[in-house]
Length: 302
Image (cartoon, rainbow, N blue to C red; front, side):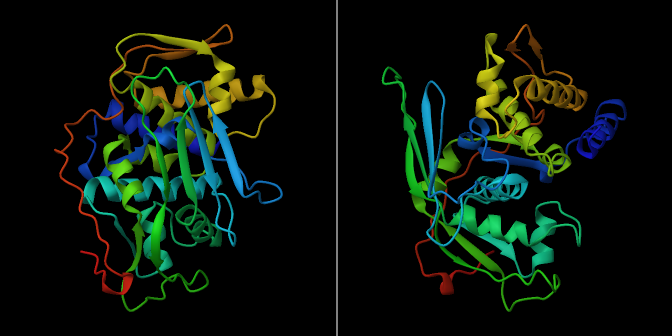
């Protein structure tokens, strides 16, 4: 069994059997874009400028900066969840990434010496790319679309060889206004302890986020061919039976700490019934989003 699934079983025991409560600081958020569409699980061959993914309703397109790459892997997912959580909980488009690589890695749940240069590279890849979410089904009554750069500016330096090396001030990322507003209005809650448990398993991260999003306000059972689910999640595995077996194992782990989740794979289909939400605590009231337009050298994170 992968280490992430073993850790999930341990977390389930602490949560369910010992009834340990969820702390407020362990509530995170993710925009619905990446709760439906999984990023590439690995670096894309040939470093293409554009990466696309579709489902029957929407199409997602990521365009990279000319000097970087399409975000991929676990680190890209953890960076994205961290940024979305900052936007939702602090109601700002200015993201404080800390004064050292060690401090930033700690924010994302990586222990000292375990996170690598890839974490910073994927942060740059993500914050320099452009995201386009467009409607495919023209019959949709509600159209939720976005076309924006992730960030309008960045000012941070991380010394990955000297992880405790401090800079004079905290590093900052200023998200573009359109993208920050999208996150603030279209993000669903996550259990950050679960997220950190799966921080080295991109398929588990994507599946957990997909379930957390789809269960939110679900009032009737949905059923569809499981291959459609495989296409949405970030997996490079071409054999459906392998992906199905992996997801069944991940689902059992998720249901261990989320016993109210009613989902199963059956006869080539995935079935999801109305279930208790992933977060069983009352969320704080959403406050207005404060947008910063001033130059980076004048931005002072709180």
